[in-house]
Image (cartoon, rainbow, N blue to C red; front, side, top):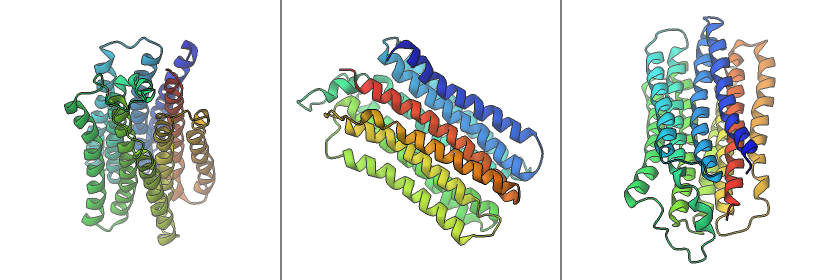
Length: 347
């Protein structure tokens, strides 16, 4: 990877973060109706996920081009976790704000903080990414002593499952505490967020185990199907939401869940790439980045249709804006998987 391309791939997450922050703020402060006060904060804090993805991109790229410093191991994860904490705090404040739409927006923003923390953990797991191609080329399949210590490995691989479990419990708690439209909307979106967090378990586990040289050929399929399965869960639940609540003010939540499914499938590109290049020469590795490009386009095209629907029914205002933000996330994931594909070639 030359320096110019490395700058481009690091710029993409920052540009997408700037877009989410700017667009989210514009939507929020352009009016005081519930739709704007729901969609605006959600789009705004999708930018936190983009920042965490930038931390992952910078961590890997600086190793590839040989400019990675010891301080970077702390700085980039610290940036990501800081944004995760700030997003969580803002989400809790929004919940108790009392403004129209604040209940749903606040819970969703809290869920986005969980995704941000999961992505940041992927960045922390990538601090020794340069060992992956080395271990992949080792025919002995032995553990690399230069990898993470046993304690660090356990910590990294425990963080994301804990966050995913938190999201699942949060989602079902929302379903259990009320049957109103806000409870159903917030709980359904949190369930989709839980699917995304669960998908990131596969990514972090794959990175950590490949860094340590303990990734086995047998687990390749397991991690891939976990991510793909989570995408299917979010997608099917989204379709069911649309069918069951057809014509009701809450049926638009199904579109948001479909968008979260597309994010899961974007994440699958990274997990699939890591699996395919492990102790193998995979000729189609350079084609895998097409997956997040395709999901980004689907998000944006779907958002275009929903924008049109919003002209006639106000309930589609929120998913139209949120799907646009999801498109930014998917496109950011394109830069990450492209970086992984480039770094995997280094032998």
